[in-house]
Length: 76
Image 1 (cartoon, rainbow, N blue to C red):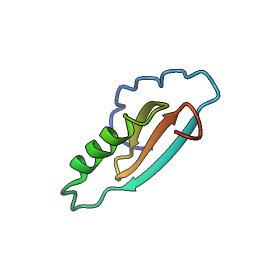
Image 2 (image 1 turned 90 degrees about the horizontal axis):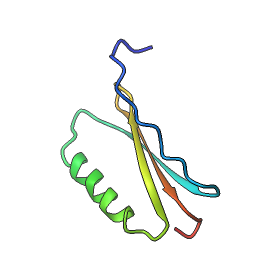
Image 3 (image 1 turned 30 degrees about the horizontal axis):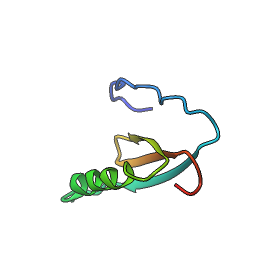
């Protein structure tokens, strides 16, 4: 368990099945130059993919990050 206070969490919008997900994991290092810019660029690119439904992010206090992209079909 972490001694960090709980952050407020917004539930994921419910998508009508079927839908597909792509999961990306990252480990943040001490040197993080360019991370925010790369993350913003990834979001800009994926939001224009036909069939893109949305994206969620989570990160542990230790730096493990998970990004889940939701897509309408496998072609997306």
